[in-house]
Length: 79
Image 1: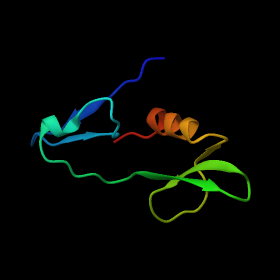
Image 2 (image 1 turned 180 degrees about the horizontal axis):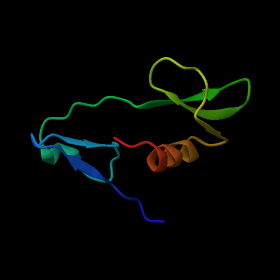
Image 3 (image 1 turned 90 degrees about the vertical axis):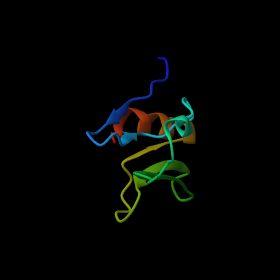
Image 4 (image 1 turned 180 degrees about the vertical axis):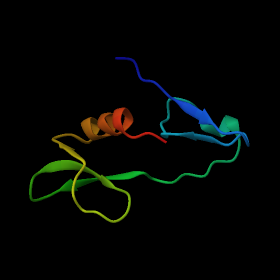
């Protein structure tokens, strides 16, 4: 499956997307980045976990590799 980037623009011209380095978003103008999730290694389970950026400590997804968590984030988190 080829990587994709989806960028949504509102009526003011502001763009929202899940950040990746697939496109150089600086070409659109000044960036403001806010994380929707955080990806951390859980030493107890020996798995990488996708967690909400703030608050909850329950994993949304876990996998043996960080790459799998990044792929899950790309497929399941929308701006």
